[in-house]
Amino acid sequence: MEGLVNLVNGIIWSPALVYLCLGAGLFYSIMTRFVQVRLFGEMIKLLFTGKSSTDGISSFQALAVSLAGRVGMGNIAGVAAAIGFGGPGAVFWMWVVAFLGASTAYVEATLAQIYKEKDVVTGEYRGGPAYYFERALGQKWYGILFAISSILACGMFLPGVQANGVINAFAQVMGEGTVMNIGALEVGSMRLVALAIILVVLGIIIFGGIKRIATFTEYAVPFMALGYIILALIIMFTNVSLIPEVFGMIIGDAFTAQAGFGAAIGWGVKRGIYSNEAGQGTGPHAAAAAEVEHPSQQGLVQAFSVYVDTLLVCSATAFMILSTGMYNIQGTLPDGQFVVQNIAATTEINAPAFTQMAMESVYGNFGNTFIAVAVFFFAFTTILAYYYIAEVNVAYLTRFISRKANKTGLFLVKVLIMAMVAYGGLNSAGYIWAIGDIGVGLMAWLNIVGILVIFIVARPTLTMLKDYEAQRKAGVARYSFDPAKFGIKNAPYWEERHLKEQQRMAAQDPLHKEHK
Image 1 (tube, rainbow, N blue to C red):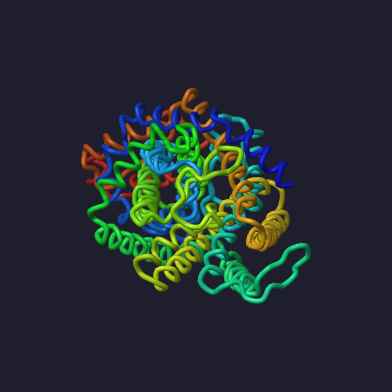
Image 2 (spheres, rainbow, N blue to C red):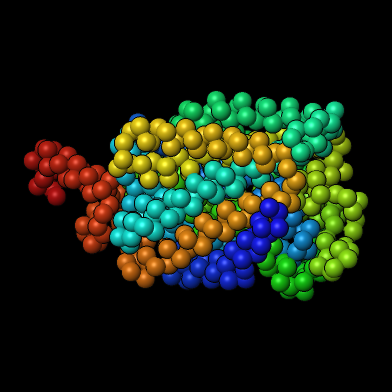
C-alpha cells in the first residue's frame, strides 16, 4: 500500500503541478495588477466590517474558518519537512508561492461568492469550486468530479496528517507509555489517550454545523496563532545577531540548494500549497459562507489569510528551526546520508520534532509543551475545516435528491473523518503525509485548471475587482452588485439580493426617488 501511495503521489506531484501553481499565481498577480499589494490596507479594513446573519457568517469568521484549514500541521511539521528535504531554500519558495498565491486565493474566493447559493435544507450559504464550475462553465460533470475529489481528499486523505502530528507532539511531551498491540500495530498508551481526546471533542463539534465550527475557530485560531508568533519573535530577538545569517541561508540556498535546486522548489511549493492552500480549492468553501456586500470583499479577506499563514506563521517556524540549528537535511543519495546533520539521525522529519526541539532549546520543557498544545489547536481546527469542506460538497451532490440523502451523506462523512483520524494517528508519519499530498495535489489540479478556464471564458473576477474599486473610489456608503449589469448569469443569490434591494429603494419616500 505504501509503495502504491508513493507512486500515485509522484505522478500527481510531478514538476508540472509545481510550475502550474507558480504560473497561475504569477498570471493572476499580473492580471489583477498585484491586488495582493495594492489593496493590502483594504484587506485589513474588511476583516472587521462584515457581520454575520442567520444564513451566513461574518468576514472575520469566514477568515477564521479558512485559517483553520490553512494554519495546521503544514505550518509546524510541514515547514520542518520542507527544510529537512529541500534545505533552507525551500522556505524562500514557500514565500514565493504565498505571495503569488494570494492573488489566486482572491480569484477563487471571489468566484465562490459570486456563484454561491442557499442550502435547500439548512438555509445556510453554500459555495465553492463545485458550484462555480457548474454555474460559470456550465459543466456540471466537472463540478461533480471536484465534489467527489474534495470529499475523498478532505474526508479520507487529509485528516490523518493532522491527527498524526497531534499525537506525535503529544508523545514527544508525555512519552509513549505502555506499548499495546492494536491489530498489526504496536501503539503506546499515551497515543491512544491523545486519540481518544481528539475523537470525543471532534465528534461534539462537527455535529454542530458551520455556526459551531465558526464560533470555535473564531477564538481558537487567532489566540494560538498570536501566541505562537509571539514566542517565535522572542526566539528571534534572543538570536537577533543570527537573523541576517538565517536570511542569507534562505535566499542563498533557494537557487543553490544543499539538497538540490529542484528539491528546494519542489518541497517549498508542495509544503507551501499544503500550508496556505492557495489554489487548492479549499478556502473558497468558507469564503462562500460569508455575509458581504460585494463578492470582491471576501476575495480580499481570503488573500490576506494566505499572508497570515505563510509570511507570519510559517516564517516564524522557519526562523525558530534555522536560528537554533535544530534540523537535519536529508540527501538524495542512495545511502541516505544527510547533507546537514545537526541533531540525531533518528529524528522524524515529517513531524513537529524540529519545531519542538527549537522551542525547547530556548524555553525548556515549556517550549516543548507549548508546541504540543499549539499543534493540537492548529491541527484540530484544520480537521474541523476539512469536515466543513466535505459537508459542503456532500450538500452539492445531494441538493437535488432528498433531505434524507443529505443527512445520510453527512453522517457517513462524519464517520469517515473520525475513522481516518484514528487511522492517521496510529500510522507512520511519512506514509500519512504522502496520502495527504495526494489529496492536496488532486484538488489543486482540478481547481487551478478550472479557474483558468473560467478566466478565459468570462473573466468575472476581474470584472468584480474593477467594479469594487470603482465603487470604493466613488466613496459609496454601501456596496452593491448586480450580476445582470455585467452579463453574469447563474448567480441566484446575488440576483435575488439585487432584486430585493431595488424593491426596498422603490418603497422609500418620494424625495429619495427624486434624488435617484
